[in-house]
Amino acid sequence: MPTDTWNRLPQARRDAVLAAAEAEFAANGFSRGSLNVIAREAGVAKGSVFQYFDDKVDLFAHLCDRAVEHIGEAMADQVDALDWAAGFFPACSELLSAWVDYFVEHPVDRSLSAAVFLEPDPEARSAARAIIDEHLVAFLGPILTDAQRDGFLRADADLDAFMALLLLVLPHLALAPSHPELDPLLGLGSSDPMKGVGRLMAVFETAFGA
Image 1 (cartoon, helix red, strand yellow):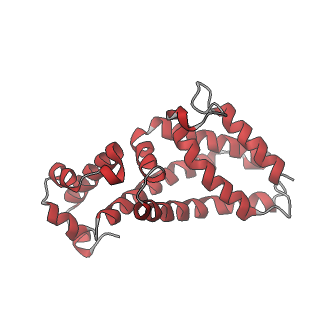
Image 2 (spheres, rainbow, N blue to C red):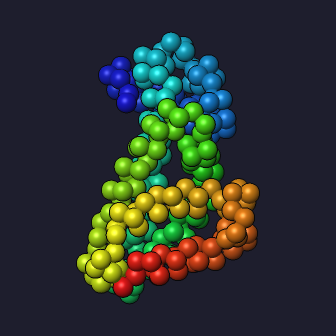
């Protein structure tokens, strides 16, 4: 997490560092991302970066935390707009479609997601995934609990298993429409990725639906 020095910086300086780091990691991933480039583009000394964050992993994790927060805000707006009372699975299908659309329309967030989920460095990947999974579990947990309470999911449905499957599927849905090589079967990289979303939702309904 950011240091006290970071928290005392003027907002303009923090914005410059974060913008430079976001651009560098989105373009090159974590392993190939350069702190020298980030410092140069932000107009700070490289040593200053280590006064702001413990290390490169800490900076990367903080960026992921920020990205997940504003992605979550966008998805929360979608949740509020959906008619869940009319049926959990149709509404959830619309939510996953909105998720796909978000990453198609926000290439920087998509590139940061690729930097996390395709990152070979285990320390960076683990740190970022821990943050992302925490946010997703907090976001999805109440939705699944409410669906079971309202009778859309079986009373004996394993919500942890459902959640685990969603944690696997969501990164795939974020990346596959722009990286067709990741999805040889569902057509998520085609002109109509929502058909693939529908097929996945049908499997979930068979497994967990009431």
